[in-house]
Length: 276
Image: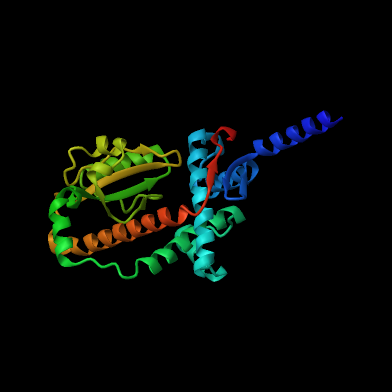
């Protein structure tokens, strides 16, 4: 009888243990909890079908999920919290959609809390001009300006009209009297970041070059280069604000990394990746 009881107890414990994917001290994270949070994250933030997620994606998410739990616990010790109004404002500004699950809202809260912690522990961090200048000259490649083209877009619904727009633009004629032609405001694009299909159509990127109609699935797109500017290196004075911001961000992140490494030593963390 005793053997049966012990056997049943071991079975129950093994089943319970099998649902645990991580432990933070005595707190357990179950596979169900993680899966719910992971699915919500992919659906509401990544905006990809969950079927495309891999085991590696799940493992990486679990690590970040545990990290999030530790940050939130440390924030409580520091008296740092997030008001509902702060959460709504952050979501509106950085995500757009307010229809988020509670699991995703908790992840967003961690982002806000992290920023608040950084503001507190890195409040004395500064960047001086010597550091800015040194960084600029040591990283000139980062400030290379690519060649750009100013492109005007024309959208039409049918191929016949699209061909007419192409022929008129190629001949330097106006398309104002053509019905159902929608013109977009000219926009600057870096040549190197243009989609391959657009690069092929606009090569060699001369002013006046017109693309043949491109089928978008919802109509036809015709592009025309109306201006062009060459690449080069961004001047130091123009780059200074960018460099200062980048250096400040790097320093603040380094302070946070050191802080997290220090506080995480107070937690006993275990991962059970094979349960994923």
